[in-house]
Length: 331
Image (tube, rainbow, N blue to C red):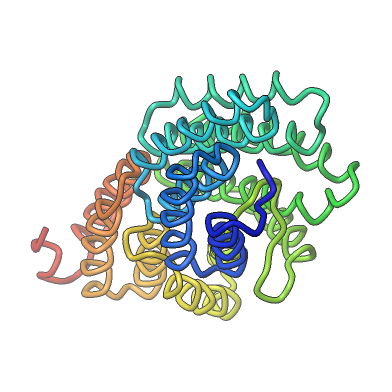
């Protein structure tokens, strides 16, 4: 992406990027919108591409994935026109992310695969492309592929200057892939091995910095930090360590308060609360959490999260039907 200069659009973009890196997503979105308008009016295509990509990423955090996909596509076309291969690849990865969230698995995987092929001589970019292929795979329900490519992303990143910190991103996504895998096993009534999840969370925590997280692409730290705590909660909960699970749950609440209300990750808070309520056999809270989980999953555009929420709701309904309370008939 182009380096911003002293022009008003460049200053707006630099300010928006600083806000994004600090986790101030609202300020970042407003700044990206302003920078995009200024760059377009001044026909500064480099700044326009960079602002469109940042806006796409901010919209994705808000789970406005259809608009995120559109702005990412705009950034890709502008970058291609400028001969900016790295910028075009970053925009393609933003499109893969959006397509996955919209439930378009084939398109998401195709975009990520195209990015992997285009980044062969850019190791950190290739690691980023593998990371997004892993994200697309985990939401497509292909756990084995997700873990394979995310592990490759971690290994590739660690071997590059500045890469070890950046490997935080695929590590956290690998941990989340394990969360989904464990959940699927539990819902199917199969035995669960929590050790891979616990190991990944532990490795990611070693790379965590106060209020910050490394990444392979320009990213807000909020999502990674939140998913790390959620993975920690899930691992501790499945291991039967209630005190550790509670600590991670409280950390999730603190980070969720900084996330957009429409973010799909807000549904994960209710999932964690549902798990705690079922462990405590608190029928009233199970009822409330299961319903709130479905509601939160529908606040934004994240089709796989909506499907998962309905599955978890059905599981809770089955649990309530066996619970010794009239509340079980409230669904």
